[in-house]
Image (cartoon, rainbow, N blue to C red; front, side, top):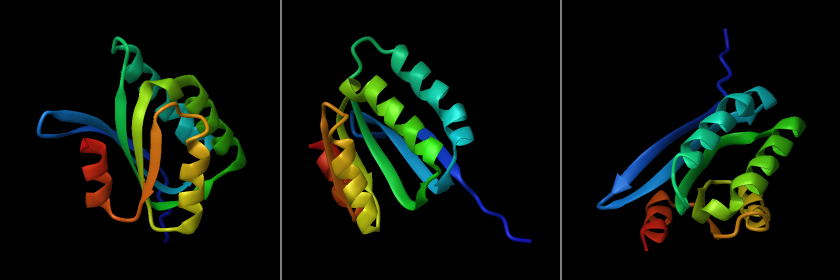
Length: 126
């Protein structure tokens, strides 16, 4: 029996005194995945006055989105885009680099693609 994992995990990491949001996408994301994760993101960001979020988004195991899930992702960017100061997208495929460039249109902070996790973290902490 083959098990196909998919979804988004979310966490908070710290390097020295810097805290940042970590997200990890696995498989092909669905609308149902976003129905679970969107309230978590909304809740986490609403509890902080004037959030200035740095985020590391690991997409090395992501295979893409269902169409409706891509729309859900777009809506999150519109709703919370001005709360992110830096987003490092860590991946291993060319299409992910294109997604990072498109994401920068909807996020007021900087968005950069990295194929090396250590470089992504160093940039976030800079």
